[in-house]
Amino acid sequence: MLLAVDIGNTNLVVGLYEGTRLKDHFRIASRQNITPDEAGFYVTHWLQSMRVPNEEIDKVIVGSVVPGLTSVLETTSKRYFGCFPIIVSNRIKLPITVEIDQPDQIGADRICNAAAGYAKFGGPIVIVDFGTATTFDVVNKSGAYIGGIITPGPETSMAELARKAARLFEIRIEQPDSVIGKSTAGALKSGLFYGLIGQTDFIIDKILEQDTIESPKVIATGGLASGIEKHSRHISAVEPTLTLEGLRILAELNED
Image 1 (cartoon, helix red, strand yellow):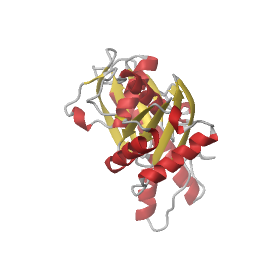
Image 2 (cartoon, one colour):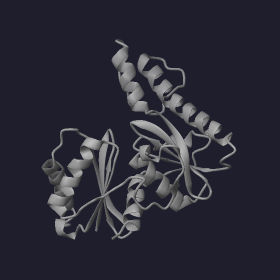
Image 3 (cartoon, helix red, strand yellow):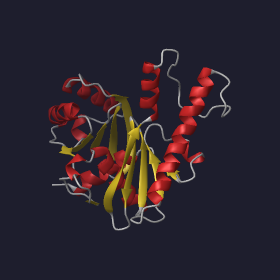
Image 4 (cartoon, one colour):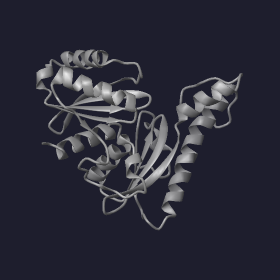
């Protein structure tokens, strides 16, 4: 079985694959000070709840945008599962080509999203990942990753606004009852929700103006993606586990 580990700035997500089937996945907060044994405890306890012994894990792949946690999960993999994990980067075998100016700077999550999106939907495709940052990744018809856009994610923006404005506070990201807020909370909720949708569609409009890509499929993923497609003019589907699927594809491609 394959253990796929997606380390983000906000969450650490672990998925268990049996062949091409995602049996289950769980999510914990990314903590810079987590130890290999703590990570091993979380994963082992989760596997035990599914009656999967550690010995059945024969491959581990790690996609990380937090360098300090990459080595932690690498140690966990070796210590608890006897596996030297595959570490995702542009230097491993990929089902896409990376055609940007500084390919070493592309994040593992963006590689995974591009690989999975292209494998499932073909190209051209735009993957919008709503997380700590909102990222837009573009793969053309021939399977070349040609670049993207990064903006602060909605929770990041909300937290910074609450930090800097004494009378404002953090709220949940959800559709408000009215576009015009009747309270501070309502105004914040409307601004955050419709601002996110407006920003998303405007950026995609600008992508569509480029001569390098024509009529792409637009797919959303990430922890905050659910429901966005109902309001966006461009997003056609939400794939909540796209990054994990990308990890699986890359693990298969990089088998010894």
